[in-house]
Amino acid sequence: MADGGEGRGGRRRARQARGRRAMKWSATVLAAVIVSTAGAGYLYYRHLNGNIKHDDLNLGDNKVAKPTPNAAGQTPLNILLIGSDARDSKENQKLGGARETFGTPARADVQMLLHLSADRTNMSVISMPRDTLVQIPKCTDPDDDEEYPANNGRVTTNLSLRNGGPGCTVATWQDLTGIHIDHFIMVDFAGVVSMADAIGGVPVCVDANIHSRDSEGHGSGLKLEEGTHPVKGEQALQWLRTRYGFEDGSDLARAKAQHMYMSSMVRQLRENATLSSPLKLRRLAEEATDALTVDPGLDDVKKLFDLSNELRKVDPKRITMTTMPNRYVGVHVEPTEDAEQLFRLVREDISLDGKGKKKAAEEKLSDDPAAPDGEIVVQVQNGTSTDALGAAQGRASTVTGLLQEEGFTQAVADRSTILSEDRTIVRYPSAELEGDAQRVAKSLGIPLSAVKRSTAVTGVTLVVGADWREGTAYKAPKKDDRMPEADKALNAADEGACMHVNPAFSF
Image (cartoon, rainbow, N blue to C red; front, side):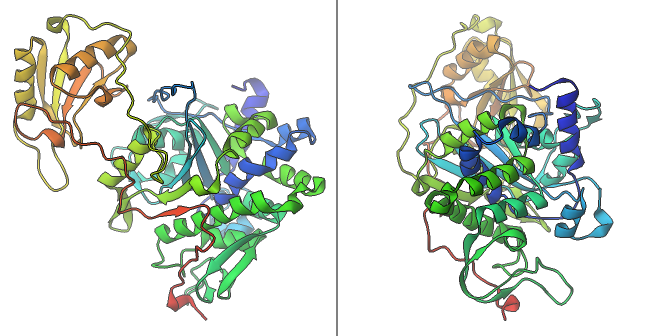
């Protein structure tokens, strides 16, 4: 990790890139990683390294364990792509509008998780709408040690960037999804425009004429005729920010447009022979490195170059882009049960396209042996509450009794709290308790895959989930590794994708 004056200077530069209001552009970030650094590795190496701004990866207290390597010793890569709506410069303010918000703290108005499979055969990109209601954890600003307390209730996820920087957005994602995040990449308005110009344009399609502007002045200003057109510069930014005019005018439609742009850009960069020009590559490298804020694990051109090589291994046919399943809560949205299914697929490195099915992994026993059953302290909690049903009464006590009959005489029911867990789970806080937690699970027939390390507990904790609302014998639910049907996905190789235009915004 970078330290000293140079490290703090990099963080301060990142910290200054924070303003207000929405913008959706994040395809450009992926493009910068996939292609630009491939040619930049030998072009002004030190100069380009100096362009790159960096900030701490995770500002939260909770850590998520890295996934277990596969048989070949490979592990997945999870990268959070963040779009800052910063208006910290005249250029950003001009592109984003809203003079009254100049210099105010930025929001993370684009958030996409890029998951690269361990074997590098497939990639998943999951968008989270900026207005998703989440609990932002406590975050500590690395520059001045200022603590931002965890929210008592839920707030929109885009506010996480204000709590010390992009590392708090990473912490928020990890707490929500249980997915270990290896890196983040952040870009602002001006970075989108400069890189889009350097690339030379990205083809996008609309099924009717569109002008994203209503009678009250709302809209990005995007104006295109029906059909496919290359967009670059400010027009590319307009496409990625457009909400008024696409489909139902929601952030969900905007995310879909971003996926189409990203997919088209991936194809464009792979197929565009003109990018073999040293001058074009030099310009793209300059613009990309100057636009990015990254974590210390990506803070030089060599690291970005190595990452780009990993990403380039995936054929567009195996890249799936989707939006987190959600439902409306007033004008905001929240994750649904299907969202947890999607997150689980990522955690278990299962491809979203249904191809190359992952072989069932053997349950791995802990290297740390369990203590005798009678010495294992277990707290049992009732997690059977769901959106449709209240908690099943007495489940913590019933399961505590089962454990005591099995010899776990120090099992105790926690009746002070009612939780909501889809699946029964056993949590433990540290490696020396893993064997104990597995022993508890096996005694009740709970699969070892449901034994999870978590800093949210202080000892072995069994949460009886909604899958065990009654009875004394646990029946593990049949595992479903399909992407949730309620979710719509885009394949990056789909050249026929076209955004539907709301007739009210056609001309």
